[in-house]
Length: 255
Image (cartoon, rainbow, N blue to C red; front, side):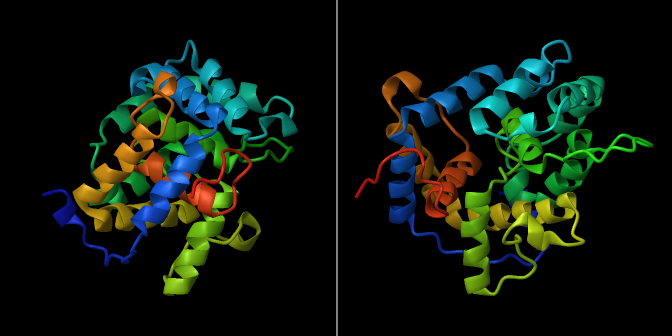
């Protein structure tokens, strides 16, 4: 709680419908492939040091891309380049991410934003002097680093983006998560990502410990017993916004 009191930025207030959120979670977890994906990623990202081990980093690049459809296949050599960049930066990344405390997203989001500006470019970077323009793979970068720590880096996808933006528009929140990447205009990915961090920081802070625990428990209890993993509040809320934003290709409707 002491860390939460260090927050100086004026917080936005969000009132999450907990019953609707738990229904969305149950819908997501009714998909065997969705919960199996989480279990596989949890198994292969057990801690920061293992997740970023330079000798096996390519395994986790391929795994995140394959399970979460980040479309690295759209560019020849993207997986190799990303794995190489992560491997070369492995030691520095482990040191940076290991300095985060579990409650920093809620209590000190500015620390998470500062680190995001350090780590995301390892994946987003364009090669100096290279005439080819690479895809920056923003969504992949956020998903990869989410699984490295699980408590700090929000997952960017179009369905969660749609729901969060609509909510912030209704509440007249500014600055807010953009409606899509085309709407970013001159806003860089790292600057836009700070808005995702601040959104989740304010939301989780406002939920309070009891509602956070209720959502995490609802997620755990609605997973099939053979696939259960304990997810962070951040991952559980991503499920809510993915479902509510229209990402309903997985799961079934639970009344």
